[in-house]
Length: 367
Image (cartoon, rainbow, N blue to C red):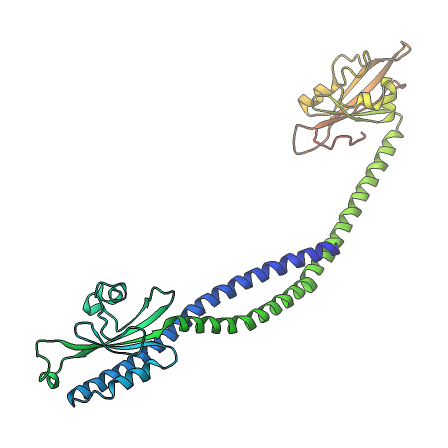
């Protein structure tokens, strides 16, 4: 039983550990996704603020006809950690100032995948920032801020133009994802250790206070059942001993008048053995044994009442004996039962008891 308890404890521990691991993994995934979005939002706000600062400086320099600070500012912002590049484009998409790998003079094509990431949507639905794939295995958070044509700019730009240029500020989104993953691992590791300790504590509590108690109660119940079976077996053996000690022949028949059990006195009268007798019909177990005017067992089955008949039995030596046979049904819930018959051998009167009820094969009863 100890091995069974240990097995149940192991199964319970594995099951709980699996559930806890699944919950932790699911929670870690959703936490990672949310944390990444939070980092992305923070990077988007920071990039937008710096791009607006560049735009304001550009407009101020253009109005004052002083462009000396634009290039250093682009280079300074582009060299900050996590920044993939900063570019200033004119209204036709040609790069004028840049801190990244795109050289000055490069013209962006609106049909390119990077441009279509935003331009495939209507102008009213375009966000100022969007994560796009660079095609080199990484992602960037691109923030686009237009330099709009204002009244102060009309001296150099026709009023019909809506924008005079574009500020593009790129942030390395792969670094943000890596940072989110690192934070997730830093959180999951101690959480997993705590969860496993909790699982171990729960398994120990279950083993000590539940499984062991259940095992003790099960053992007590098993011992009780074993004792009851022993008592039933002992009572049955005593009953068989009592029945076999009776001189009258006693036989147990089923509804088809097949022999279920018989005492030693009855078997001796048939001249056969118990193995040969059990399962045989009472009509064939000893030829010429019973010569009554009618069968009391059949009458008992039909009427359900106790029947008494005087029958003639021929002994093995050819002499004739008259015996009184009693047949009655054993009370039960069903009519499809067995019958018990008692028959006296050497006296003018003998008992034959027959009862109809379902009992276990091999059980004995006495009239």
